[in-house]
Length: 78
Image (cartoon, rainbow, N blue to C red):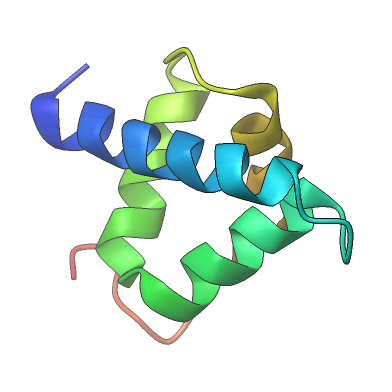
């Protein structure tokens, strides 16, 4: 896994650690919401690609992928 991908996985894992202790919503949904609000299309796409390629990650991060959006109006190469 490339260094940028491992950094994204580490950042998402830190979010999972934080949201795991928050009672107001399921942690995977909270992680995904934060990623959707704060990360660029490229960051989201790179995280998803790394996880699909088998990168190890917190189970909450893996579950969050189902809630991460990739806007269709942004070209894949952006």
